[in-house]
Length: 232
Image 1: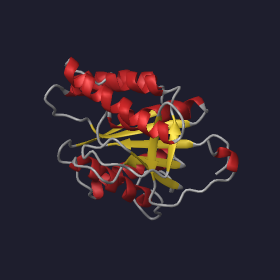
Image 2: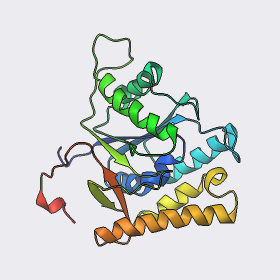
Image 3: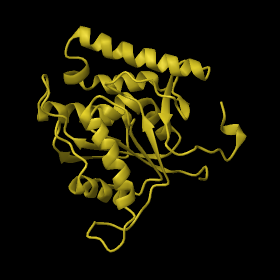
C-alpha cells in the first residue's frame, strides 16, 4: 500500500464501540488526510439508561467531535444480532459503496455476543463485497486487510500486531466517548470506571512503545512494512 490517502471503514456493533476502541486512531488517521467511515450495525437499544432518540443524539455529537467522513447505521437488532445472509449483505453493500482499503472490526474474543457476531458479519461481508453475479448494490470491492480493535467485555489481553501512538489524540478520544452519557457517564461512578479503563489501557499499551498513550490492533494475517522508517 502506498503512502497516498487511503479509505478506512470501522465497524461496531453499537454506537460508542468504535469511539472507545479506536477513537484516538480515527482522529490520527483523519489528521493524516485519510478518509474514515463508521458503520454501526445496531442502534444499541434497549439499554437501561438510553432510548433510540438519546442514542442518536449522542452518536451525532460523537461523530461531529471525531469529524469522520461518513457514518451509517444498518438498523439490525441490538441484543439479537446474528451472522446471517441479511446482515452480511447489508454490510457488504456499505463496503461496495465506501470501497475501503482497510476494515476495522471488534477483536474476536469477547463476552458480548453482539461483538462476536459483528466480527463474523464483517469478515463475511468483506468476502461478499467482491462477488459478481449478485443482487448486491454497487460494484465489487475487496478490502485489502482487516484489523481488529480492543474494547472487550471479557477483560482479555490482546497481543497486538502493532500499537498506534495516540498521545496527541487521547483526550479527543475521551471527549468523543463521553458523548455517550447514557452508556458511559450516566453517573459519576460509571464515568470514573470507564474513564479509568480507557486511561489505564491507553497508558499500558503506550508504555510498550515508549509513548504516553497507545491503541493496540490485532491481525489474523501477518503485517508487513514497506519502509523501516515506519517503526517508532
